[in-house]
Amino acid sequence: MEKTIMLFSYAKINLSIDVGDVMPSGMHPVDMVMQQISLRDEISIRFTDEMPPEPINSFGANLKGFEIYLRTNLRYLPNNRYNLAWRAAELMIDEYGDRVNPKGLIEIFIKKRIPVAAGMAGGSGNAAAIMHGLNAMWELGLSLEELCEQGAKLGSDIPFCLMAQSKSNKDLPENIRYSNIASTCARARGTGTELSKVRPLKSNILVVTPRLSVSTRTVFTGIDECTISDRPNNDKLCRALRYGDKNTVYSEMINVLEEFTLKEYPEVAELKRYMIETCEGARKVLMSGSGPTVFAIFDSESQAKKYATVFKEKSCFAFWARTMIDRKSVV
Image (cartoon, rainbow, N blue to C red; front, side):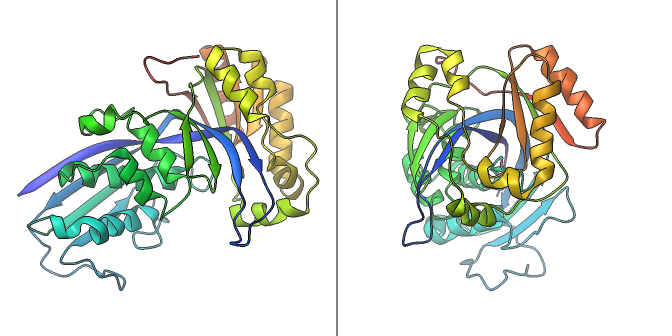
């Protein structure tokens, strides 16, 4: 017995981020709007009941008779429990493996295109794709709500990635693709897992990632010491998206994490300044997530493509992309 599925795992950008005071749990409450874009990784999953001749190192996990074999096209990425995609497969085994007979080998290959640790939920999207893929191949019949509940155990961005991928992977079960909560744009509150659909923004995006790493933990710790000068009005932003008021959308696109990241990482501040000064026709320039990625929004596809070429020549990871839209709901 053998089954395979190939899924796309898309990047996201943050149209806004607001952060509250740290909670007793050590986490920060957030209020943010996330938008899926067309930059994507490719995830191939093969499930077979033919086990490898030698056991694969399970890194101490109890895999209930299953094996997980993970590979990527990037040698420096971990292929074990330090990879969120591996842990997503482990979670699905732990929660639903008893329903699957016969047991077998889960073979995963991830072709990465989304820059790693760039504030675009690349790893979270990979984990979401694994959960979608195993739900489909094992014919578990899980709802999107159930998948999101499980995904929240691994990371706060995963429920949004599950919602958004449901709209953009045709090989998923119908109850997932046509779920009432499936959306490529959503508002996230609380710890990031309280999600509500938002009408998506239709735009062309220039995504630029400098060659440095930014620690999300460091940013969220440091933001407590910052005086936030400007916060997004996400009620107003979501209304503007709903009614197609793009000028208000752009004026309410604010990321409070810039207050810390731009001060602590001058390379990111310089990149944003340079993009504002040089990207003619850009409607908005903003940092995504905790950084270091900075993106610019254009009405013109040709302008976005032009500046992607310019920044590639400056040794940055630079991509042109489109926002992903729900076919019946476009701004």
